[in-house]
Structure formats: C-alpha cells, structure tokens
Length: 223
Length: 290
Image: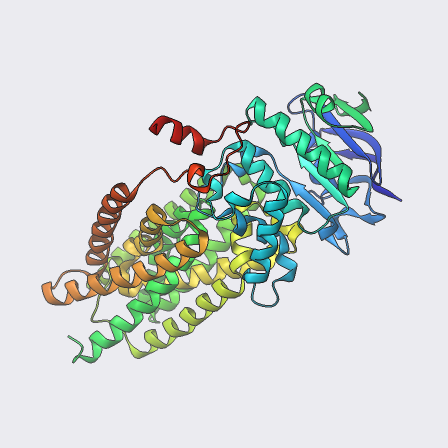
C-alpha cells in the first residue's frame, strides 16, 4: 500500500487552478521531496494531503483512506514551516510542546501529566535535546525549534512524516544538522517521508531521497 | 467594607471574573486575538442600550450582542484569514456606533454610563448567580481543554492531527469568552473589560517560563488586581474599572522592574548542553555576555 496516493488532483483558491491534474504516489518507507518556486502550490498540495483544504477535483488517499477522514490521523505527523513556529511567542517549555503530540493519551481532562512529560523528556533526550526540556520553546533558535518539532512529530511513532519547508528561515549550519537528523530517524524508524522544500539541492545532498517532483505552472514533473 | 451586602456581592463577582477573564485572555493573547475581547466589550454596549430601551436586563442584552459579534468575527476570520484584524475593527465600529446612538435614545443616561466604567453598587444576586455559572464553565473548559487550547494557539494543523476537535473547541471557547465579557461589563465596565483579559496575562508573561506558570500567575494576578481595584474603588469612591486598571498597571511596572533585576543569561550554558555546531539565540546571548 502506498503511504500517499494523489490522483488527478486539481485545486484553486479562486476559479483559476493552482494545481492541475497532479498525480503522485509515495511508497511506504520511502522519502520524497516536492520542490518548486515560491507560490507554485507546494504547500497547498501538502495542505490537501493533510486534509486541511477541501478537495474539489481528484483523489487523495493516505494509507488507503481519504485524507480528510482518516480513521487514525495520528499515523501522520507534521512539521510546519520554521516561520510558523516563530510565531509561538508565549512561554511554553519544550517538554510541554512535545507532550502536546500525545494529546490522544491525555484522557478526558486534556492536561499533560507526569507520564506524558516523562515520555516527552525521553523523546527529547533521544534527539540529543535533553537539556532543553524545561527551556521555553520561544527562546530557541529556528534550527533547535525545528528539532523540537520533529521530536514532537515522532513521539507517536507515525507511519508518515510530512514536512513543509522545514529549513526555510533557518541558518545554514542548522539546516544541514536538521536534514541529517531527519535522514537518520527516517532510516532508523522506516517512516515514509514527504518533504516540501524549495532547496532541493541542499535536501538531496544531506538526505536520501527516493523520488523528487517539481511543480511548475501548477503541473507536476519529476525533478 | 465587607459588612455591606452589595460589597460582598461585588467582590465575589469581581473575583470570579478575575479568574475567568485572564483564563480567556491567555488563549486570546497566545492566538494574537486579544483585540477581539476589546471589540466584544464595546459591542456589549449595544446590548446594554437595547436592554435599556427594551425594558429588559441590559446584561442579557450585553451577553447576547457579544455572542452574536463573537461568532460573526470568527466567521469572517475563517473565510478571510488575512483580514482577521479588519473584521474585528468593522464589528467593533458597528457595535460602538449603534451603542452611541442608543445611549442618546435610551432612558436613564446614568445607567448607561455605569456599564461603561463599571459600578460596585449595582451587582444583583441574579448577576452573581450568572457570574458563578459562567465562572465554573470557564474554569472547567480551561482545565478540560487545557492542551487543546494551547495546541490551537501553536498551530491548527498540528492540533487537528494530534486529535483536537478544532471546531468544537473553538466554538466552546468563542461562546464562553463572549458570555464572560458580556457579563463583566457591569462590574468592570465595558470599556475596561479588556484590561482584565490582557493585563494579568501581560504581567505573567514578563516572568513566566512555561505555559502552566503563565496560567497560574495570570489568575492569581487577576484576583489581586481586582481585589485591590475594588477596595480602592470603595474607599476612595472612584470607578471600579479604572481602579482595577491602575492596580494592573502598577503590577506591570513592579513585575518589569523585578524581571529586569532577576534577569540573568538564562542560557544553555546553565543546562550545559549546547552543541557547538548548532548556533542558538541563547548561546548568542551568552557569548554577548562574556
């Protein structure tokens, strides 16, 4: 079964289509990258795959189920753009941030408890971030924030990891560090990975990619 | 002052609102929508005017107008996410404009004015009961939806994938915040409700290092500000809303001074785990301090 299967997808925010007849598939356990210029529709495609936008034409299946009505959405993990996390200006410790990934384990009262904090701290430790557990997330650099977010993404042992421009706005040293970390965890855990990035050369230099696509004028081609 | 029945009612209602409003404020500030509370408090005056003209409880009018305005703002924000601020401004202007006209037409100008700046003598037993109900609902939702509200402030997609029922949580929060703000206009005053929504949280943010700390400190400060403000209002015969705001501003100044005195490079050097290859804002701070 493919982790992601997109068939004849067309989508536009207005009458004009941003994405035209897109078809692609991400096999289980593989890692793929979608690239393209700013505004080409990469992030829109990702939002459609994640079920954030309503599908108008075509079909998207994630592990054989429609993306917007998945029986277990926790099998998908998502790492947003670094600049999205920049907007988290309020103090939230890294362990609080990571423990939010365990929302489904909280019970009726949705407050992270000792058990969830311990799991979050362990996950941070596994990523070499043990010392940051009680540090406010908003005090970290973009690169470290992204490492915390990938820790959060992986805490539920997802089957598919989706990343939207995870290195945009991050300094070059941290970009490489992040991509190498991503490649390592992907390989170790056998997670299917779908990455959107406008920095294909950088991504392909630091992580193994099984397929790459480029979106140009709303159409997808192999990069 | 506690020997007077009206003062006991006012203090009790004030303290309950002082817990409920900062709990709402934390979420609004984290989502960068604190101006929604300002818009709702202004729109509540429209309901007050309708209540005075229609001959029913103005608080009921205030609550109803706040609920309608809150869902209108949310609807516009959902449809036009890039114009969220604009929708707040449009609804606030419309509500305030109509309220000003109704203020001229409604009987009892002084009554209308008491809703602008609050009045410690006007809290009835019915107001107190409704405030207690809303207080319990806000506290319950803040506890039950603690992680959901935090996660929604971080990122909606992340929250949804984590299992948060985004529409339900947002709907409950919008409804409760509108009701609370509508109710608060009687004690705190419509023009100053926003101060109790934002100022305790703003003070807490100066020193807090976690979300949990921010929540607890905001509530404690809200209660302290309200108690000080209402007491000052009683002893010096000034408007309670203004007195609460002054207490909060003094609090912010004191916490700013405390924060500056306490500030030291909270660095990873302390934690001893910065990887040399990963430059951080924090180790830059440390380097600058060396």
